[in-house]
Image (cartoon, rainbow, N blue to C red; front, side):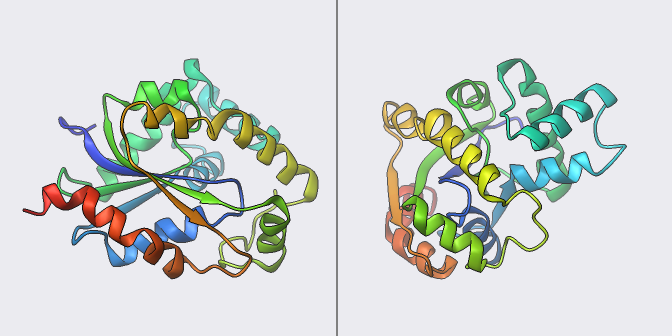
Length: 213
């Protein structure tokens, strides 16, 4: 991992809300005049699970089990997540003047505490949508990021929704207690990544303005 904490934006939202397309948008177009690197933890887990060489066999089985059941990696399994994140940062060449877009990690307070030594969360961007809107977005593949997903049946989505509400949504309060700005995007069935980014552009410009001087 880099010797300094990497400035980061954490995207929070339930499955199907549009986190991955928003992160990809910032990676393509940058943010506040700086390069962005989108760390999509779910995609990285799926890539690791499909490979026989990226993780040790015991870690690989934990990752595959988590993907099958929708379970979260708990505190004792954080070294697996850290290994995946460190590989991403090294392979992409993420530097201290870049912005790391975090999507799917941390997913609960234990992971958030473990990550404090490595990343500096400068803002939390919360994608809010009612469950019917989420289901409509998934059915229509509104943001174009669901092709090839095999875990989007109604039951699997319901499991991930409950996990998000119980374990991940409380990160709003966790970071709020640390004074981290919370920027909210109300997501509709047809909200595009560009519209999401525009909705919080001014707020994020303010957050990173001290690093632009």
